[in-house]
Length: 173
Image (cartoon, rainbow, N blue to C red; front, side, top):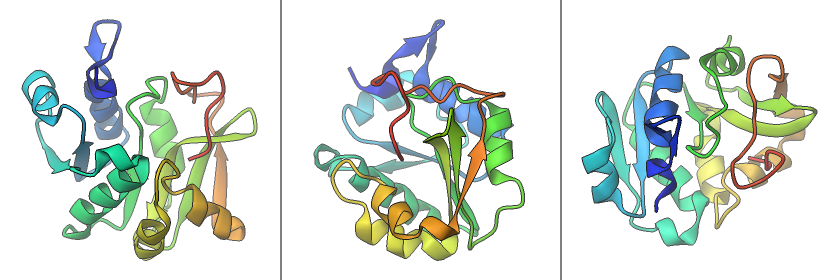
């Protein structure tokens, strides 16, 4: 089953993620759909979100990140908040903390027990570089590692859990 349709406490992860982003002050919202996109569209409440279909989803998260940034590129958004559906312990407070004061030049990552996690904020100035390096299952990781001095690490342990349901500890973004 696609991760977007997995559920926690009777709610689909994609619905939880959208609610967290809305409550965290994010607008516009983009949902990238890959595997079973039609099933997700039929089952989830994607109201108010732009849907970016990623036909290259088998390549990994890098292709999904590129699709999401491309969809945001036609908007006036100054930054993108990356939130994976399989991190259902992220809260609106964590999104607000990571986005506080963000601008087009900002790179920020939520941390949990000193480990990088999500959400990740990518200022618009960085989107071309992020997209160029987003390959396979690395997402923004290669770009963030190439710019360590520019990355703000924002502790969020007290307001969220960064646990990725695939891993005991949150993986790097």
